[in-house]
Length: 477
Image 1 (cartoon, rainbow, N blue to C red):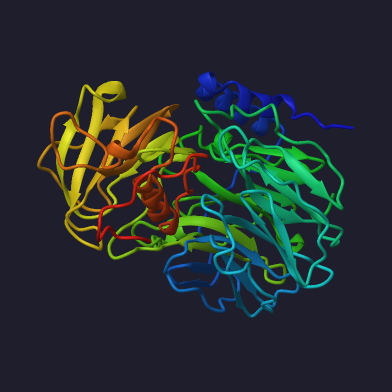
Image 2 (tube, rainbow, N blue to C red):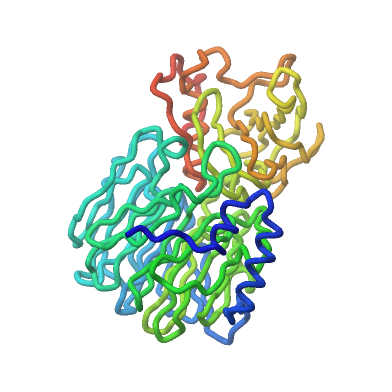
């Protein structure tokens, strides 16, 4: 029988237009019910930090290099021996744990990334899921998969995470619209139909964690909501923080170790850890140790100590950083002249540069921000951020990768970003001559590839390929 979200959850997800009222009401309901509201409190636990992995109350065993491809997830072994770190190309790096293999190098098509990893408690192996729904087992049994149409993130919601049952019976695959695909494990309900997921005002499911006591699970969303299915509800950041997630989206959720409480931890992109009915051991936000331009992307709990690990995407590329790292509910759309995205939050500069243009009445909403890069392999080239965004810079302003160039407001509109021609009238994308209105251009695909190696979700290639090549000497990624 399908489990429906309770009344409190329905407020948090369906009444987005009245979110402050819903959050306050949810908070009052939680307080009246005696729910635990402690979160992100400092603890005296041991802390070990390197750019891509931080350990809080858990044994630090090493970390991957802060290089591309981006780090996307982390999983801890059930016996406390170590952890596995997953990159967007499907590569697995093991620390204290056994490495049983990775996805074959170059095996993922354009626009497809690895998104999650889960440990099989029976074999010690693991499963990897990709955004296209493909599941691969490494010393873990293959139990099935639900292939997702190539349309991907927009009309065909991508797979964003995977979680295994504590008894090793199988795994759950979570999709961006909150739906669940079950393999060897019972379905207890989902958020499908309860999230405002779509091209406008999206709310994206970002993580799933299984309750080791009940076998139920929790789903976390990008705006801080937590929904429980067959597992007890202990609170959510959306209620306690009143939905104040601009620039700091939620990125993951993990169940607490049984020795440390019956609840769960919710991770935000700035490294903050909200704890609900679970012990806090600290966070990157408390330690002020998140690398500049880095984004916390995964959390895994050590079942022996009760501590946890934060995985960080900190993949600078010759001075470039992910310009979309602060977007909440980022939903990739088509690749055309550039790459289209929907969401809400700040858009940063790709690298050092100078603003050359801000407005153009030839573009939707009259905005066409362009800046010229002054460093890295694309030095001298121009980047644009256009359409439904609010400029935060002026012509002649000097930029760094921490400069906020524009704002995508309230998750109600979309943006386009890519390579631009030198300033002129009218302002144009570098791909304007090869764009026929329905195709992915070579310049759009190139810019999407750059965003992907920096840790952003890639755009969606369109069926018609690029009709023309990149200019001679154009950098590739």
